Amino acid sequence: MKSLAPARTWAIERAFPLWSGAGFDAPLGLFHERLDLERRPLAAAPRRVMVQARQIATFARATLAGWHRPGPEADALETVIRLYHRRDGAPGWIFSLNPDGSPASTVRDLYAHAFILYALAFGHRVTGAPGLIALADETLSDMDRIFAAPHGGFRDAVPAADDIRRQNPHMHLLEALLALYEATGAERYMARAAHLIALATDRFIAADGGALIEDFGHDWQPLGAPGENRVEPGHLFEWAWLLGEYARLGGAVDSAVRERLIAFATRTGLDPATGRIVDAVNEHGRVLAASTRSWPHAEAVKAFAAAAILGEAGAEASADRLLGFLMQTFAPSSLEGGWIDRFDANGAPLVDHMPASTLYHIAGAIIEAERAFGSTASA
Image 1 (cartoon, rainbow, N blue to C red):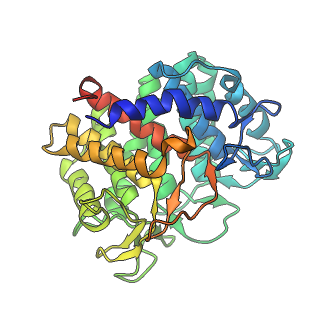
Image 2 (spheres, rainbow, N blue to C red):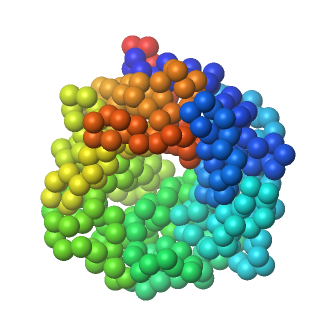
């Protein structure tokens, strides 16, 4: 796999040093939300707990892989627990802080809680601290109460900004539960994961072609009329990878579901000539948003890496092509460990900064490619 070795070098020599250096606010003990394109902190942005959790988990994964020697950022999880957990005296984790460390938003957000669980899982793998698993279990118990909703699954946020129920936070909750299971071997996490997979196969994924709808009403009926529902190819790849992870960890998965997700995303969202993936289509495959972001390409690398491990023909070549496109297009060497996260349909940048949260996707793709193809990285 020709694209893996330079991507690994980029992560080790450029990305992790950048985001543990300029990307880390040492006085506050938290990661910056974003850097400008000259790699300088944009310190005025609120510090979302989701971003902190993603960076913590990603650096933990790099440490476990031997790609990063922890520095001051290694204490970020302890700081996050102190500053975000029950900060206002109520169960759960507040959403964001001001740059001075004072609370900015005390909303309870399902997506953010999923990533806290993910960070606690990887924090435990690095440190072995049993208190992190106890805190994960406490958080799950709080989530059951805070986000309780009818018809399965959870509410997106409390207080809610709207009545829409979204698949996306449930997807990341599944990811966190699988990480907790891998960290502990505790079957309670796999049992919860099985419920989320059943929700996805029963409600999120259309039975007639592999489209996975994003937004729903309170009863998990698609929010729009047929042909008016948003489908993000990147999330189809991400779900395909997660189903592969569930199977790798011992869960029972119908492989045809994973294959339909990859097939729909490839057919409707991926340009086979270039490797470019559009942001959104509808459930019939018509393009809704021809812009493109970095993360769908990272998730496609992961999906094809998982498929290659399962022995699927052509999967390694697809992963190699997509990883090469990801690194060349979004993370050019000129940005020295940074990235341009989004382009319009004509290839013009749509952002003027580097969001820290992107590291989770790009580094995750490289780590998963390493797991699948490490022995053939230069082949």
